[in-house]
Length: 163
Ligand code: FES
Ligand code: FES
Image (cartoon, rainbow, N blue to C red; front, side, top):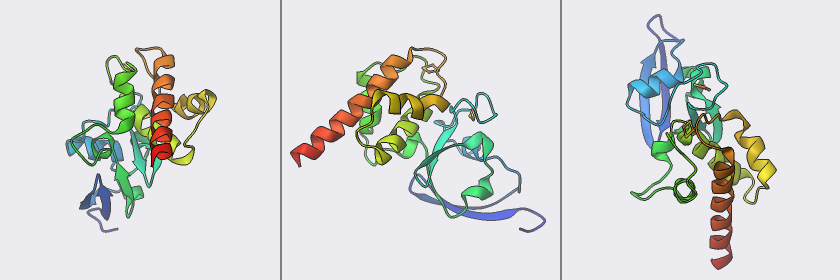
């Protein structure tokens, strides 16, 4: 660390970020300032999940993390989930199951759900509810969100069966 900041280097949605940042720069602010629209700040206290990103595959609250903490990590926001112009299968399930209204919470929900399926490909409804407990939705019922995650799991399962 120098007087002027900390040099960090990490991967953001497949691209290398190399910058010198203030020691206490918050990751959510850093990402939003660089145009990452899928990171939303709501509670700003690490409890609502709206600002979720995946760091080395784990969902974290970026409002409660400093930029220097992701040095050397792989950071994925909802913008980096799909490697093509198509929606990621989890996004597709959220659309098909009408699992959003205003959409403010949706990126965080989707990212957390992706992390869940990467660890547990065939989750129970209770697994989904437990994993999404840190993601708050102010609009819709949670039933359609749980349904969307289970739908994505089923689609992945069917794909595995066919291949
Ligand atoms: S804004 Fe970060 S957890 Fe709520
Ligand atoms: S869809 Fe509006 S906050 Fe969840």
